[in-house]
Image (cartoon, rainbow, N blue to C red):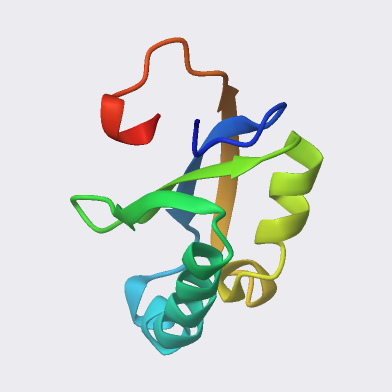
Length: 100
């Protein structure tokens, strides 16, 4: 049994800060609360900051691109307009045994 629901895709979400990091810092804790909730709801598979710290990357599951975008529209980085998001969808053809 796969952890990826039938008919869903995986999305690589590339997050780019659009303001200086000093303006990101006050939004980090609310963003991390959103991230924790996304893990609790089973949406995120992995996530983290880019190196260097210019944004982040999220690997998430969703039934459609529209659903992924709608879900992330509640992220404080989006609501506070401090980052831009780009999405790449894919259906895995090879998966590590731990993800099956």
